[in-house]
Length: 200
Image: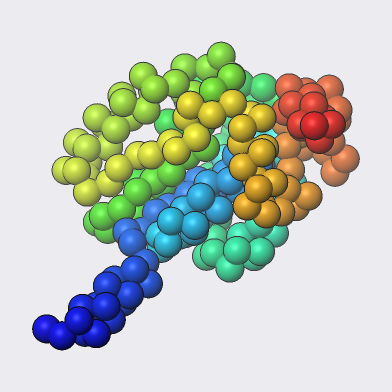
């Protein structure tokens, strides 16, 4: 193989998208950061939004559509009907449920399921222990084909915000209120986080 052919092969490989990743999007800045992160790494990126009846589902899905449109990423919306009523704040089992929803979508295809859990929240499903446990269960279904990834697990909210600003994430298109009003309530934990970040 000539040197020019070797260079062409290397360039072709560099341009080729890497493995597929299904990003769990919520319409907030954490999952928007994940989209930017994986697109920057040249992954084949898809997005999944799950409407399971959470209070902010309508506004979150609108934000998820806007962010995915900005990045030209294919968005799948899964709607789960139940008679359960969820309140703002922690929803036990939420992140595990979202991961398994993504397993359903991925099917037999190998790749990554990415979730935007990060440092700060005092919830079990935002920890390294949760990530390891959920990977063990997913391995039982997918026999190693699917990796559950949390690239910002060790980042605080401020680090995520700074990353978003650095790479041009459309943060104004995201939505962060847990109560789901057209106008953010300004009182929930997500609103307070967003207000503090906007002041930086």
